[in-house]
Amino acid sequence: MGGIIILFNNTNKQYKMGFLSIIGKGIQAMIDEATTPESFKMGEKFENYVRNSLFIDSYYDLLERHMTIKQTKTM
Image (tube, rainbow, N blue to C red):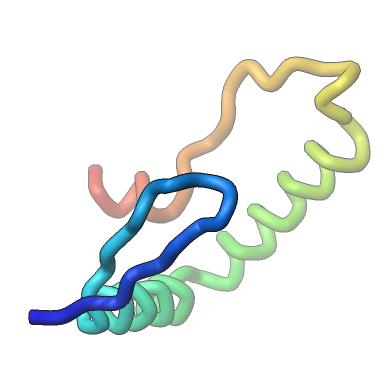
């Protein structure tokens, strides 16, 4: 079965990914997006704002981070 070959110019590595696996990953991403609660999305946006705007990496070290929705679902 053939696949799509993606070549990156700055490396000599070739990555093969079948067309169906690309479609499958896209569908899974859409399902994850649709099933994630809005309250969780809002909380993630707030965390990212605080991390990127108030506690900048060059001044602060991140010691702990809450689990993502994907990590929570697997428990």
